[in-house]
Length: 323
Image 1 (cartoon, one colour):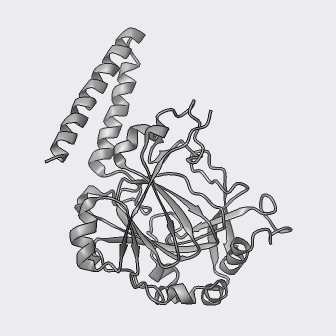
Image 2 (image 1 turned 60 degrees about the vertical axis):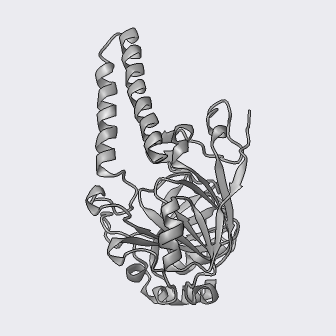
Image 3 (image 1 turned 90 degrees about the vertical axis):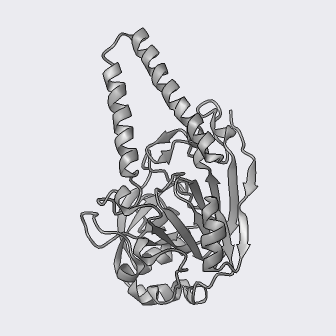
């Protein structure tokens, strides 16, 4: 049985200044689609030909899948290395890799830039990995430069849809080329998202299986279509799902919006839970292992006691948030 979700539009703001963002938009802790913000010459310059000329044959590691709906839980993709210009050719011209494909003709490609450190300890920074392109894009100064974490260069085939997940940092997604549909869900819907770590198990958010995920259709969905030049502000902990309607080029920028010592220093991707939260989750997991040593009826009783404690905390947290 399939179900559908109603959706609400993401709020749209025109010609936002730094002061408007910091004093009006950011404190709301809600997604916001920003239009008319100066992002430099990238929207006019970054054609397929131009970015290939500027980057050339540098090898990049990409996700390759036979399905446009990529998911990180079942990992229905391979990591492969392609020359940058070949990636752009394949991603921008569906079906062109009829002979030299990795999986099937018409396969799908997605690049999420990473740091140079092969051990995965370096964060993505467009100024380091793509210096010949970095000068074309103007990243809005909507946050303290000392809080900057990463700037991630992304390329995707038309139709590529990324798994629903949350990040622990605020970020601005800058859509440079192509259109993209963004679907977002509030952190308050966490109990409806069927999480494994930071990812939702609900892969098909447009036609969710109501038998497997009955709570998901209770979630409030927010949605917008991004055009070239648009920016979307995605607050930390908001679940988001991106669907490329065209061949797309984008850059998103993450920054630490909380005290720096709350973040894991060994986290190049910026998706590890905050240190206190991670410790608390580990304690819960250890507690459930301890309860496994008890008979079933005792185990069931004490799990419910733990749930009762957490429910009380949720109620108290909600009450505090209203004042």
